[in-house]
Amino acid sequence: MVELNEVFETHTMIRNENLDVRTITMGISLLECCDSDLDVLCSNIYDKITESAKDLVRVGDEIGLDFGIPVINKRISVTPISLVGSSACRTSSDFSMIAETLEKAASKVGVNFIGGYSALVQKGMTAAEQMLIRSIPSALSRTEHVCSSVSLASTKTGIDMDAVKLMGTVIKETAEATKERDSIGCAKLVVFCNPSDDNPFMAGAFHGVTETDTVINVGVSGPGVVKRAISKVKGENFEVLCETIKKTSFKVTRVGQLVAKEASERLGVPFGIVDLSLAPTPAVGDSIADIIQEMGIEYVGAPGTTAALAILNDQVKKGGVMASSYVGGLSGAFIPVSEDRSMAYAAEIGALTLEKLEAMTCVCSVGLDMVPIPGDTSADTISGIIADEMAIGMVNQKTTAVRVIPVVGKKVGDTAEFGGLLGSSPIMPVSIYGCKEFIDRGGRIPAPIHSFKN
Amino acid sequence: MKRVIVTLAGKDKVGIIATVCNYFAENDINILDIKQTTVQEYINMMMIVDLEKCTKQFSEIVEGLNAVGRKVGCIMSAQHEEIFDMMHRV
Image (cartoon, rainbow over all chains, first blue to last red; front, side):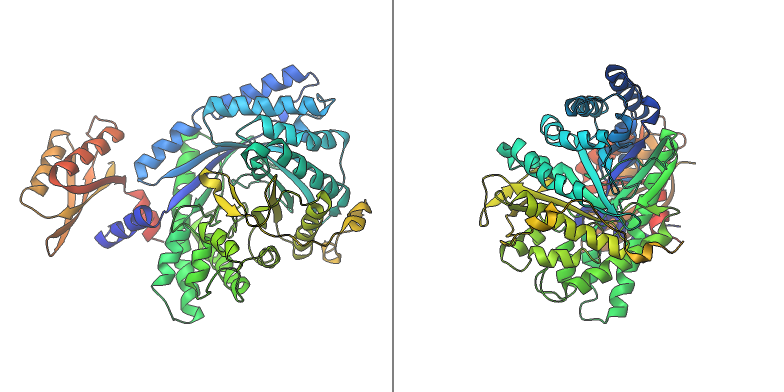
């Protein structure tokens, strides 16, 4: 029988500590939509998405009401469009038409975002993949809900440096194409090393080809709950600290498991995974930086930050794994600068630098996320930043990503405003020293030795 | 059985539980369990109720309870029981 204190504990988490289900993401395979005629392809895609996801938003809201837990986002991820469009698209603008179709379908079913305008080019690019990548700036500037991701590297294949070089340019062009809104297009574009096929979080969600036809993946959240729990064990040793995070993470993840199972049942779609990631928002108290600071670090970025983040990431996994029957996606702690109020503040006062963020990405999920950088940063430098991050992921056999925003017309000292869940952040300084000759070499960086285990 | 946990929190006064119970009676909702504590002049109450015979949509019940809450000056909520079982039981 449920006890009074348990009921009120759950209520406190939801009302005062921002516990919520961050996203129910429906993965939809578009492989069956393939056709050599672009119009037929677009119509197939529209029909498949609007039919599969027609009840997604309604069911998400109903579950939220039934269990008294906010379900913030309802989203869709689709098969990487570079594969779906390869037989129909002859030019980059052909691919942009698919982006517009995705936009129309997303608006029709009422989801917040649709991910999968993607290409997986970690070992090389086909002509179609190159066209899709080149179409990203126009696709993202002409759509609101479409998110794009490009996989540039993996532990098994190494790093495709030609694609890394191209993405430096594409990110600059995307920034330019959306310059009137602080280059917000780049907030919907992420590059990956070792991406996961079942990630429910944007901008990086896509429905991998190893997945079934349609699937429900759920991302939970609750940095505020973890922070509050840690505040109760102030001054205690690491054993107590770790146990506290683990137990809290268990409770948070159980909610995700419940919502995922319920959504799967009500929609008649198989349950895929629960993603354990702690995802912040710009709301007060919904911050990863606050957790790190609650552990005893003065400001995020100070010495000790990487260790604190490593503890958080590992304990969240340990608690969460037992709470859910299937765990997947990125599962860790996100450190998006603009989306986390305290992270942005630490950047503003100089406690947090790009270099420290890079170190932090070695121990957390994903990587350099939502980092606004000066608009005059060169494409080569952006490629260099990407290459560094890809190398970390490749060597450490983990997912890493880069979502930097070279905000056109802004420089260090200015602030970028993206609005809503994307937040705001001061422009972070980038090294003034270049890497053009390195990036210009072209070709591939070979896979590291530990990929030959099998 | 459709078990739902209803909670109420606010400043205590005469007639709070009576008003809530009347609402349940009017809507064919059976009360299975009531637990409450009062600390100084504040009341925390939890009821487990069965909505099996209730013909209204769950959203209408939630709305109705919010109205009852406003009437007695307390905050009320209603949630399916599973969320508490999942969170607090292994």
